[in-house]
Length: 404
Length: 180
Image (cartoon, rainbow over the protein chains, first blue to last red):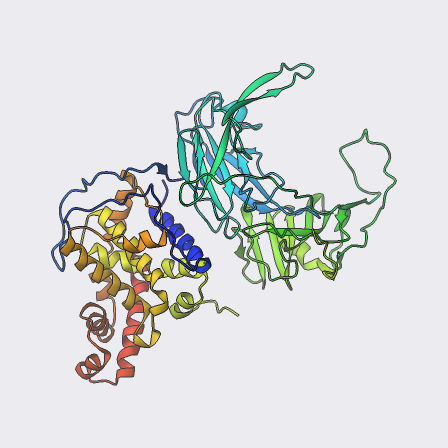
């Protein structure tokens, strides 16, 4: 059940955002209908004792489900009904690309499963949907045949609701989302079509996608349904997908690195971290071994992005006592060098100044100037804090941004 | 640089949307307790609280910390709304409409939750306060007496009266928080 006061809070913050950016008050939405209360108020010590029989408000849009909750429906095998789901949003750490990783985790008792999500795009004014998951992924495709699944879509600040078939679902903001961005979460019945983003005027809302046959597996035809972003007046926001190429990352790999791709040809590339706009060094933590990573030689600001967005200028995969950890340096994607916003969902770590932790994303970060030094993975918070303490940003050159 | 615990005036004056969320979190319980004493109808409690904060958002530029603490200003808005609602027979939504806020449709479970939050015992919270602070808060917030009058009645300076109201409201907020 969604806390209505959280919903109210989101509406107020959203209204405050618009109030800050608009010189004139927003117009009343046509589909709004406020409930009129009968004369039921008595002032002072008298208390109204009448029953709450006022009609439930009739709206075309329904409230979103929260970012974490329980999948409805009867519990049965091969079904997600009764599972607790949690949707997480974490910054991409791969150098040269600016986007948010999203994912959904299902758990019940000791069992967990993870749904894919994310995508490699960030929201823009003309392409406001990103980070969606609905009906088709390794977890929910199988389970969805037996019961309901969870769908979600992340949106830019301009999207007030999304339309999915005959359902309109209001978006909401949350401290667990990138600042300014919003989300809509909904339950999909068994056998629901695969949701797709990027619908353009003239295209059919309902269509199908062909899954080609593979050895040992038959091909399939999967019905699809477009997700439509709606603005605050209930109008569909026309989507135009732009170019979000990012910056080419240069790869390096230490000779000690063990890769799962044993059939790859022998590696003859760079064997140590390459010079780039950002560089990391380590000291004082024996056993911390850099294995591979990426560097970039210029930064491409994502000037068309809306909402909070980070870009990584370096990523390095370390190993410590058998545990893999990724370290990265995050900058403001729109204006690298500007003071960065908060990492969604992250909370301060007691005793560690300027350090935050986002447990659901296995991520710990420390503010270093106008950047986040981030460590993700490892055995837990203690190990990530030790690694963070051993790492230094030795170079951060923002003098040559690529003007894209 | 932002302090760890910014004042209400800072939150209302910053123009940052997230700061208004902070302000909302800080005072929601007190507003619900205030409204919940005057109606037990959960839909009315919710709509009154929503319109109270929407009105505060709309008029946040008019808040003057020299005239008293923000919680007093906020409860004053709520009080006026309640009176207005009784006179008109319905709860105003004008600020929410002007701000373009979406309506919140409430399920039965949510209505139950709202009713529970509105049942916070304001009298019990007031009883826990120091008598001098309690009297100052009631005179200022409920009876809307000017500080000069409160000071004369309590036989203290106007500055001391302001301090008692301010500290009393902080204590009240803490007491209400402890009831949940």
